[in-house]
Length: 134
Image 1 (cartoon, rainbow, N blue to C red):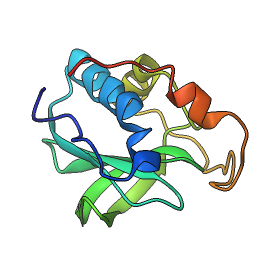
Image 2: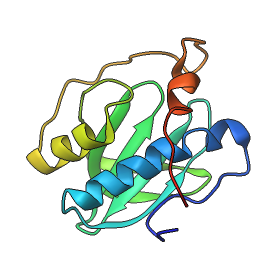
Image 3: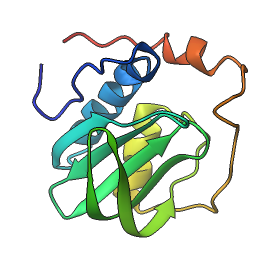
Image 4: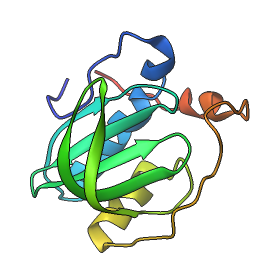
């Protein structure tokens, strides 16, 4: 396993996001972006953080998708705070390749709440389609 990829989370519901986030980290690296580390965060809503080597971080949550900004603080179990955060668009689960392209291109979008973390709309089923080998 690559040290930049998120570790397994002890809460199964949170860990459901791991393969998607891992796939996104790998796509960012393939795009030429330098990833330092990543982790899965608390739930309600579930979220994850990817720290880039240039002082920026990406945060994903299951309601609004991905945003990017300057990393202020955070760690596994503590919500990440960003300065100057901008949403990246593409829905709550853009493909990893689309996410990497949006970050590299500097594409931003208006913040949108796509769903609520309490919804039972098939998000977990989609998350289960992502497979990563560790």
